[in-house]
Length: 432
Image (cartoon, rainbow, N blue to C red):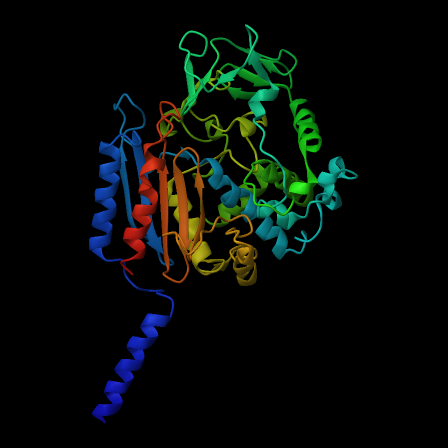
């Protein structure tokens, strides 16, 4: 009898090693390490403040705020405050929307852009498939939206990669400076409100005709011979936003608001100044790129900014509690606290690695990483403003990291250079 019991224990131990870690607790030692790393990042000046949440398929097990909302260090970060989550928008908004539309059999991933959007029909862009957009293998190039609308009032270059404090005094990135005087194209940019114009900042209003300008630029600059190569570009998700709106028959911000409501994500959405007090919105950067001043509640990303602060690649604001709900739903393969949100097959499809044999580690919308990365085995996304969500279904863990590392300017690259977010993930992943 005893030998059977011993064999049973051995089998149980073996199963624990090979089955997903669902239900395992995250050790306190790992959470203490997360806390220490967050404090180290704060002390090193990687961000003025941040919010982090660690959890699993049962919900949050650790959530903490650090530091202050800006460089003045007068207002402490609180859990209710929302951050500009930048490219997390790609998965939390656009991909989420497409997953629901896929469940409803309204979108075919093998169909082309031209099948859904008449403005691209008959052009090479129209032959790109939806799956190629989601995996960034469409071949579409990156282009800076600001370059279509702003120029140097004194002539010459708008941006320089050589330091010249007199002619190019404004830092817009590491080793990149803007000219002394930015001039907005008067046909598209106004410093005062005009009928029909869209607000992109406290004193920046954009003519909606810019949409046609952007579409024309995408079509004109596209080189089909680049298709199949991995090129990460926001243009893919601009087009996917258009696809969502055609199929959902409403603007993407309204459509995803209904999805967020199903998860109880009451602090997530576009254009937060319409639903959140300004003091509860964490400032991002002092925007010199489009001369918009300090951004509070206006999206940091220039493409989203000129598109009514609503775009498929950026524009969402959220907090750690809300994003944890999204992660919890994904770890439960589309279920959230007893309710089916997305089908299991759709979650598995969108988080799979269809192009891994070609060395391209992307899901459908979701980012993934190769075996040499500490992020291997999971999926999620990072955001330029200093954000990240990551989930591992085998380990049954998730991480939400929110910061405004671009404050006061995006020249602060400490968070990226230190790989702090990956270190935090590794501390949790190795403990379960």
